Image (tube, rainbow, N blue to C red; front, side, top):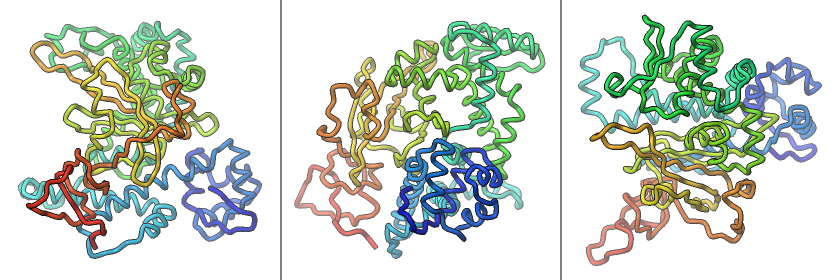
Length: 481
């Protein structure tokens, strides 16, 4: 968030977002900056500018990197708007990129609203027949409910995948338990038994069948399948404790999200419970210190905190405490068919909300090399470069003859952070040529890609029976209007 002396900057939405991430009221941040609450109010409503002096005071008082805080969300919002306005629906409307960037910067709430509206439109367009049949069976007064998974992803992104109330509660619990990582499972089981009268039982697969965890409220028993590995067992106990001991904190966070339908509300609570469980297994101060000392060696971190590879990668995306931040990672989990089941970004990577991923990203190659960790420098069409690692992981085993579930985890960061990773040792990050990838095929305008699955929706398809190119699709260079 650069500012020149004397230059007027109207950055109300960004200023408000920073204040909310710090968990401060307008009065509290005004006291810290030495200005009046009314002036803070005017700044956030874009009725007064923010001076360079105020921004510097904000950075010094709260130990903030204003550049990261300013650009991460705005780049993500811009990517969302660019994806939406690339749809043929807007073919006759030429919206300049700068207007989209201005909207992303000044009106993030409008960006969220447009994204939700477009998601609803896309679902309705793709499932028109099914939607009509479902609507016929609904009561007249029932309103449309958006995809709860996407709604919860929006809420996580809005909080930058960091929830200070849950972090504090997890640290307090670990302090009270006062046990090393290898003793956590036994300590959690004792806590459930002594404080909540809940007995933990590891059950055979023929009893649990397809269920990995089940809480029997009547018998006050937490049943965990024998298929769950030790790290998963501790995680499930911490999750159960979180629902009981952090109920008020969960409701406070959910309440801040505004009105929610029942499905996204339940899913958000489950997601927050999972967040708490990971924070218990990998307490913020100790985990961040270890990550920095080990140059983010994921396998060693997994051993030290008795956690799994995916658990550690996911936890790394949450290290966004204002005065003690880790590298802003992004994470993707896909199956071997390319279906995305997880995506988190505490940085600027522009994940697509309405499609898959680029097949040139080597996260998909991990299924061919299941025991290897793959490294790659990738470059988007706008020249932004990232460093990523990827590895295949196996979820809880499935009894024969069921297929064994496999997923690929991709973890990455902007190239400027890569030198801090053990995986980048020996790589000349400045000279290494990045693999050119796109967000996905429908938005990528790179020509002559042999992996292209469909033409970009922003270009006119060219069909010529006399020519066969490397790519299955040829398209015009000019944007379609």
